[in-house]
Image 1 (cartoon, rainbow, N blue to C red):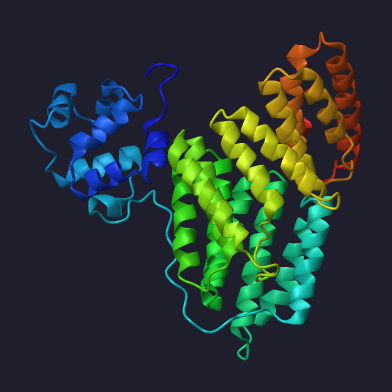
Image 2 (image 1 turned 180 degrees about the vertical axis):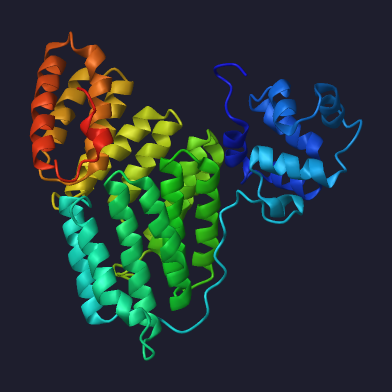
Length: 420
């Protein structure tokens, strides 16, 4: 495999919305599948190796001289390329995330006023202070206040809903604290709680969170899977436009990461259409998604597609929309904009926004932001001969030392050891 050759699973992740791949799989036409992969830069040597067949046999399949007939080879192809089993008429493969079954219809399980007040308090604090210091408080609230109600014989589906909401929130706080494995376990636990509550949109929201986490951990195939699982749930109703927009956006992010521009842009267009039809207030216990969030995610999609001018415009729009009370989101938007300026060699613009980034509240307990700041400094370092960049790097060092002192109780060892 050459240094520029992409991983076959990454290519397939971007083709899962492509009608040609879907038809080839439905007809079990593996020759067409192999040609699609080869045309997208996967060498025949690489294809033959991962499927465990000879190149001669591969050429026979690609040229239509023979067809795959053996079940074992179909299973090998599905597992090698991470093609969902159902597309090839197979059972779910061992590596496939378990899709949640439709939850039982038990009405509209809106948490009561006290539960919503607790959720709002945690969510408001998280937006401003980050999840690092709030994680333990949320877990404690789940254990002490929600857990006993789950086993109460007189309990209602509402308690399963608020338990799912706060468990998903704990997952996001763990992610913000740099503990992605822990975040995944929280999302996995939240899903059956949402099913038990009968709240289909809540289950779809958790699928969106799982899609985000899969993308952050480098698994675009799983990210596409979970975005589509969430859309299937969300479209089953009741329909929540902001949730539909969020799920289309996650699909766009995963497809862009897999270098599939047309499907990614189509998904992004659907997200924009869905958000335009959103009401002012929709199911407040779902993870929020607004125009500022869409603008930032759009910037990341367009960045991955190398459309830097459009990406910069979206990042700037996200910053204009994001109020100062959303410290973490504002910091992430500004970090994205600095990266985009650097990718276009716009050093002075990068420096200007970089100073804005460092003006963020030093008490912001977000390891995710801290790590992105470290990455940003590494991108700036090669330009230190430019005096404004050199001055910004000095401020980076001073700011990080202060942050490390203030956040020493929540920074994991892997982040403490980063050298600036």
